[in-house]
Image 1: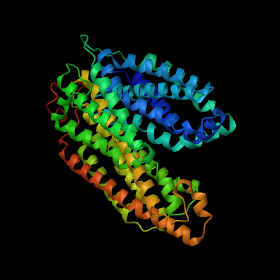
Image 2: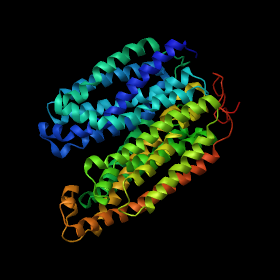
Image 3: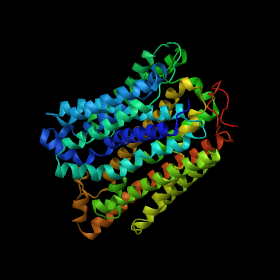
Image 4: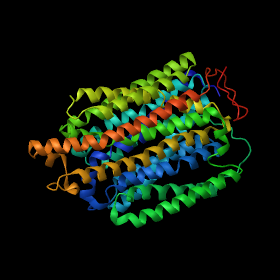
Length: 497
């Protein structure tokens, strides 16, 4: 499908705005959480404002991806955007925590639709050769949201009040909606097809149970509940795979993975979630404890990481569209990230802060080199009427990898630090402020403990990226095509021209 240059620019502007709003709602709420929980009187349920959003957006990915293929991405995108704006209004008017959590879950569900359909629509209106450039622009929304979200959330909360953290979506969202109504094209979906209800239900049960299990596993009081949740998850996943093998229109077609491009690309996407997204949340705490920095200064390292990701994401998207080459960026990116995380595992505690900042910038560059590019490459390996499904699958494995690995790393840090702390310190009340106010000997001891606990974590993540190098090498070589024609058969390798 070919659009005029003006309509294509308006479309990309609309998709970028909406993608940014969806990504921003992952990050902008963090700095207002304490204020929200205090005013609504439900501090114990505070985490569900974030967890509910993330869980809902992940669970709905395969469902909305398949719906995009069945009814067209335009309808799913516009509906998701309208629901997202309505949920944003509801969040700001919340009178209690239950109201807010339900509205946030609705926001998360609709966020999955706008993020996913943005990538799907780009795939429908561009050739494989053009796609990386535009996918890189859309993909830039996530790192920009990480950079500005917490600061913007704090400023809005302090000067306008926390409801405006949600209401700020309305004017920008309405402008994007106006552009989208004009610019997003209708996509022919062909004859009506059956929706895989059983697959959607079994996957939702399996994933929710898995997230609850890995969340509870570190709490001795919830150990039995974690075992039950793991059991339910295992049974539901087994049922899901059996259903997908037999379904006429599976939400995750397992036959896709017979294609080397799809199998390698999906593995690379999972490694991004496991290898980098999972540890980013813990970097500030690590540097506050191990390097004895303030909360503000500790934020420089994840900022450097995300900035590297942003620069590489835009650069490689432009280069891949210009040259048609894509495999070299995946190989180089995974190699850079693996080397950077290995260096992080070997850095002695007390190294000047600019050193880990530089190292994590390199890790960000490595990840950004193929973060959006790999989605564009995999989209070119399926027929057009399966674009939403494969886009959802690639995003799903990334989200699942990040969610599960984040919980695992949090448990490793919690258990490892608690086991090594001296008797004079209580792990449940340990804060950076408490450590910084202690004696120099205690500060040095805690710093070394965090260094000892995080070193093997960084090494394990480096190993994950090393596996990514193998997946990148397995990608078929060749160039992205300049043709709009869809792949005729998912078992072929249609990227070479």
